[in-house]
Image (cartoon, rainbow, N blue to C red; front, side):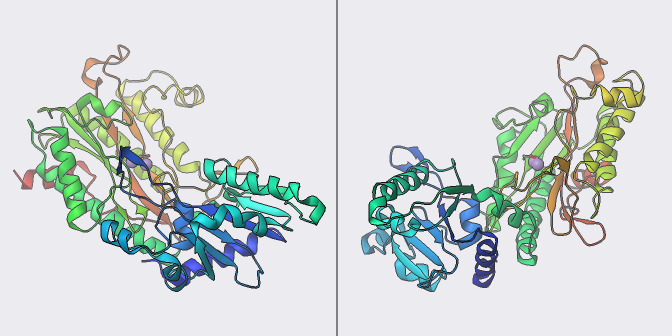
Length: 438
Ligand code: GLY
Ligand code: MN
Ligand code: MN
């Protein structure tokens, strides 16, 4: 778990990067209504959690480097006995300071009227411009209120900088504690995938396998998945974000599962594709082994100094060569790559940053050039092949096959560490595991 000391360190690092004579303002995620008076399970905004560890809604964090009374101010809900009886514990103003290290804490109701005073005389405001309607309005109202008081000497800020200039770069490099949290999310997710493989049988429904995944995560205390699980039998796997998970699993089909648990706000993101009946057919195996070869080749390109795009380019090269060999594409490999002829079958990139958000923050390019990989970055590697069921350009035996293999990879000092390596992915390992349970 992330320690209070680490949260404090992050705030320090943020404040060190803020402009001279500036202030930063960040709002918690609003609670989302599911229906009438029922809310979705609450999930804090990732930046807010990253800087405060404070997981309540109705809160605003303010950072003022060099402020005498304290640099970290937290506006949050006052402690309320009745509320505690109905909805449980909340930190209150005292907890905000004692548990979460705020130098000062005020009731959230006071935020809008206090903001002009906090902004007065500051040159720059760092805040997540455009992400939070209410905060946008509150900041602009405070600026206008200061403008209206110019004759009394009030000085509104005149520079607004998106906080996403600073925080995503910090979040991109994971600390040892963050890596520990990611490892735990991945570890339980691997157990969930293995459970799904073991439980899978023709005649079961996709949602029954989804239940196995959720059960395994939850019984380890990881109550929330990082994103809705994709449990896609047969040609449902060709729908990249299929989440209906409502159909029956058929003998002879593949099952693609893309699922990952969340632990302490950190996400796992793993995909495996295996045969519903435990044995790959010949066409399924040929395509599967091609995707696996591409994935392994992409992973082999992950090391400090290589660029972000190299693993993808390597995966594309392997996939195109393989598709030509199997007869799904015709022509010269370099030309097919140049013309992106593979895109009807492999239409997404090979990965993304991974962290608190499954598609985590962090720039992929710097000064218009693909950035270099560096130790502490975590990314997914997930090439796939999806042969549309109605694709008349390929032999019938390939149609409707959808395959993706996705692992979570940490860039280390010299190369990389596949965090999800314990999840079976060779044909032999998957068939052995599935055979064992039958
Ligand atoms: N689970 C979403 C993705 O793989 O990007
Ligand atoms: Mn992914
Ligand atoms: Mn995924």
